[in-house]
Image (tube, rainbow, N blue to C red; front, side):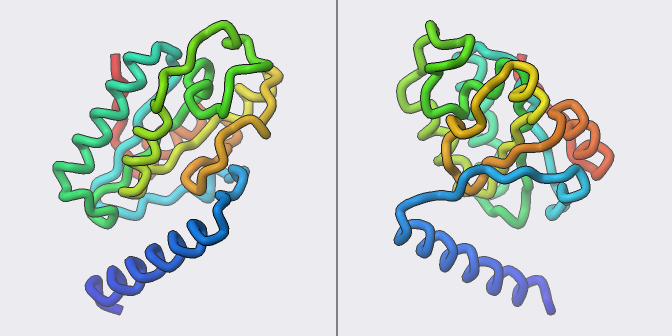
Length: 172
């Protein structure tokens, strides 16, 4: 199948899948992936490493991701981007911080809407299962979004993606 045929087919499937998800009104709970499930599917691929808890730094990372997509015309076939979050970085993907060690922190209003906006371009978010285990975090409190998945280990995922040809970026 030619690239044009593949793009048309995949684009149509994405539109149909999005319409079905919107009609059902609910996204699936994040699933657990294996490191072998991670694939490089575009010539240009990059992971953003999020192991920090500062909201302004997180917002800057999302802005950089948005700019990254913009440089490629927001074409999900031209660039593949992912966030790998562990440690404090997972807190940005919770519905609420109630029941976590961050309960006294204030969630930045609409911060997740910014993530959802860039996820429309194909962004994937990988959350470290070891972080949830060690910090005794409730996986059920993670936002329900099709672009969020759990991975066995955040740092192992960073290394696995790099070995598959993903560039590495960390906002500092």
